[in-house]
Each structure stands twice: as structure tokens, then as C-alpha cells.
Amino acid sequence: MEPHNIQRHVGGFLRPNPPGNASYVPRSIQALQIVSKWQYAQIGGDNLWLRMEICIGFKQFLCMRLGNTPAVEMLPFTAESWVETIGEGMTEQLDRERIKSGFKQLYRTIKWWPQPAELLNALPRRTPPPSSPKVKAAEEPDIDTSADGERLQEILDLLNEKERKVNHG
Image (cartoon, rainbow, N blue to C red; front, side, top):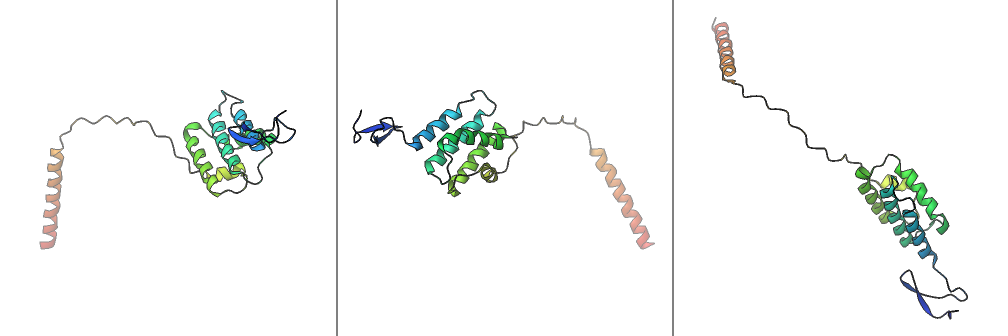
């Protein structure tokens, strides 16, 4: 058994061994590990992109040490409920950047572990995907409009002549 005053690496950090527990891993490190494992629990699923974004968001929340953080054992269930709540109607093409922006907004303002509704409220408006290049309508063949201009001038001349007759009677 290791003496309790010897430090060892846990998740990349030096930690003292607590007395009588050589396999101690801090709860914060356990939480990060559990969220990372949850992220890849359903590889190949339709919402892998959303799982990745929620995982990144949760890791940031955990590092912020927010009040009301779910218990370590509840994190996978919490994350799964976020996917179900937020993911309905979302597509990677239209919503991935919105999700990232929403999390960034939350990072700036929250002090307590947020609910999915808070992320949904923080999302920027959805912008439609860039449209495909429009097909130009076939141009009409060149039409000689010079006769139209001459005809219009004739009509104007007739109207002016009638006006003079009426005024000079």
C-alpha cells in the first residue's frame, strides 16, 4: 500500500493519495470521464453531432463547477435527456453552429447547472442553408423594339395635337 503523503497522477493532475484508498479518483475527474464515455456510447447514431456538442458543453459546465450539478452517476442520463429534448427537429447542417453559439452564451451567464430550455432560449435564430445556384431563365432572343418606339412617338404626337385643338378651339 502506498503511503498517503505520496502524490500520484490522476487525470493528468498530481493528487495526494487519501489514507486507506489507493485508487481514489476525484469526483470531478470521474464526471469528465463518464461524460466522455457517454459521448461515444451510440456511435453511428443519427445525432452523433449533437451528442458531441452536448458532451463539449457538459465538460465546460463541469469545469465551471456550477451549483446544482447532477450527480456523477446521473450525468449520462442527464445528457441523454438533453439529446432527446434539444434534438427534436434539429439537423447538423442548420443547427450545429447554433448549438455551439447557445452554449457559449450560457457559459457567459450561468451560475447554476442549466436546463435544456435555457439552451434552447440562448440559440440564435435559424438561418436557412445556402441555396443552390439558381438557374438563369433562358434569355429571350433579341427583338427589334425600334418600331415600338416610333409607334409610341406617333401616339404622343396625336395626343398633343388634340390637346392644342381643344385649347385653341
